[in-house]
Image (cartoon, rainbow, N blue to C red; front, top):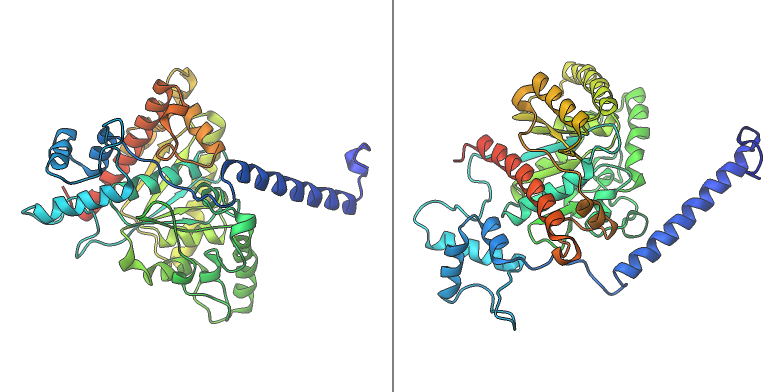
Length: 399
């Protein structure tokens, strides 16, 4: 038994113990999920205040009140206040564009000549808030009126769980992106594995451990010299099949530089690297950048695409009152200049507490938190996401 010296434990005993722990943990997580969301419950997104609704639509709150006074928008609550659903936001956007004199301004879909934006969010060190960034960015852009596809490429599948798809229970074989990029006759069309979410403009392709199969199968295919599409082109080819349906694709990359990450890099039009501003994390990122550069050189020589519209570093889990973190953030800005986003994602108990119920800050009820804590965290996320939205608009040539 494991009371012995760990070095003396037989492999079979350790294997069975790990398997048992995995089963117990999965069972308890499912029980936790059932307590939070009963079997008949479905995740929904909360209603928004007039100020929030106006910000997402892109108008002043006073103008929103004027539109509502003309008979549009939701009926008032029993207390007289108006709260707006995501569908209300969409209807108001269409109303504003229908009455506008210029090209569509509030329904922010791509226009002719504007290419699909594919953002790979990556870092191979855990704890850099990569998935937190992916979830909040995807949902923010959807709430702003863009058509968004979030793809979970991380076998740990935290992004999938955040959007209501538990990897062990809700995602079967061939239902991750692996089903659309795998080798052989079992390959599926990408449209068969896209799922809707409770946010109307946001779709997801969930992940689970099956994604690791791509890392195992690709070396065999390369060794056998099979006449398949090269591994680095496979994600890009899949996305080309659904390009017209979306404005932005968010790729939550795995925390390592494998074949899946390289394929995501080659599919991307933009790169966002999350980094926690501490010395060990920055040193790790240095190694990550060296490895990425070397591997991209190999991919380029083999015919892969490695040109991007932009690349940015995002400082995450930032504590403004932490002197060493401020020094490290300044150190990065002195090296990378404006390639470091101007705004940082703050470390906040509001974000971590919302994660306990698998919710983003855009979903969770504000009344569950200290108002100042919630507002500071949400402002930080909105500033970061707004800065990324501006990069997208600039790429499309919009004002």
